[in-house]
Image (cartoon, rainbow, N blue to C red):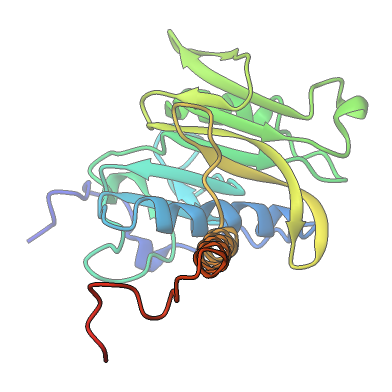
Length: 244
């Protein structure tokens, strides 16, 4: 019996390529979306109703052919399984995902223009992607755009939004840029933010924060012990304490 998620005559993802075999022309096109994915894996660790794809083919029926995909550098879908039937996806076919299209797509502009501001914008617009983020830190002057732009689908057409980090109420996340040292290298990255505009920290930052908190607690304890000794009180033998 044909799955109710499939349409007659459409290929399955087992029959489709996982990407379009177009190589990225800079490491950020793979690295930055993966940073967002790893962060999301911590932020939404207990949620199983989302999927974030990196350089993965998205197949749909609103283009020239359901066999011709669009391949965002990154995309987020809500209301789908994190692991499709418990397995990793090779590609993302809208007709196999209960017609759930990505709610957000991300394109990182490269040395070779890839139609981010026209061709891909039109594809995502027609597909119905609610938010389209274009990150262009190197070539924005060439392209006569801003380094970071968020477009929202309003009445079927994209409108450029203002504000950074930009809060996406339907996603319950904000997105924006932040410059920091990661892996010993100073660089600008894309991050998720909460509604108050606070950036979600990386696992490394959280560990450093916890370490700093522990050091501060130890310092306070040592200062208290010194104060008690100045009063002639042994901090290791306080009244009321049971000897070990």
